[in-house]
Amino acid sequence: MRRFGAYVRQRPSDGFILVAVLWILGALATLASIYAIYVTNTAISLDVNNDRVVAEGAVSAALELTAYRLASVSDDARPTRGAFSFRIGPVKTAVRYRSEAARIDLNLAPKELLAGLFTVLGARPDDAQFYADRIVGWRTSAKDDARDSEIAAYQTAGLSYYPRQAPFPSVEELPLILGLPPALAESATPYLTVFSGRPGVNILDAEPTVIAALPGMTPDRLYSVLGQREATGAQDPKSTMELLGPAKSSATVEGSRAMRVNVSAAFDNGRQVHAEAVILISTDATADEPFRVLAWQDDFDGPT
Image 1: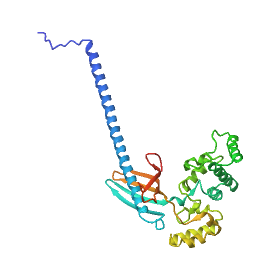
Image 2: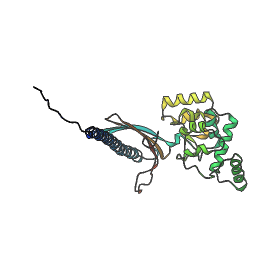
Image 3: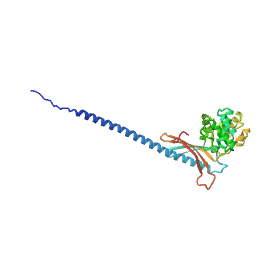
Image 4: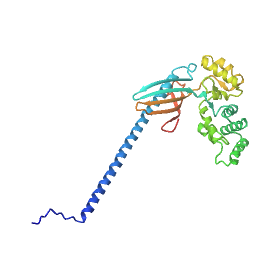
């Protein structure tokens, strides 16, 4: 007796349907992966934006607290530097501030002081003098002959721009100075400002590099000044000034109404944000605001 098993006839279209189903499943998996990446990136972007909003709030609070500390005392009693910290929500904020008089003002410093800074940073004396002359030429509205001579120097060098012959609006303009090496300009930037409003520097707050740049400064005088400053702080400014000798012509113990504020915001999630701002303290009791922001940069804009 012949036995017949179940027999299913396979049609040619069955293989095509199977391939189509597998292709659709693969496409759906790809779309699901793309959507998952999109959702993840969106969440990260929102988290970064949220941190930026919180960080800006912390920096604003730091500037306001700094201004309150400085504006609430008389000009004579106002400190030229200080530090404090506070916490708001998920952020712990550390604040340091220092008078801009601790830096060399590009618009007001005598050329001897500017040349001294470049010399301290490694330039040859003749080159340092040349750079200082070009800075003075850049910031000064000279008479016709001097103006034409300064412009001609830039033309001869093949540059596509002329000296401003007006005050520097920012230290970032320094690399445009004729002949000044970019590396030297970058090295000098941390010791320069356009907000001090003083031709001299505050020796009680200035970096050793700035003090070393004072005209007539010698290594012995520098060590004596730094030692005296560390021993007495701001308690005996007169004695510290006397140690400078002839270098005191470009020195002062007074601060500036412009303050540089460094802010470090540490989030509970481990993220850290740094910001640097320059504020101008108002001395007008009737002013609408106790301070004005002159410059602001944080990690979201670029390294501070």
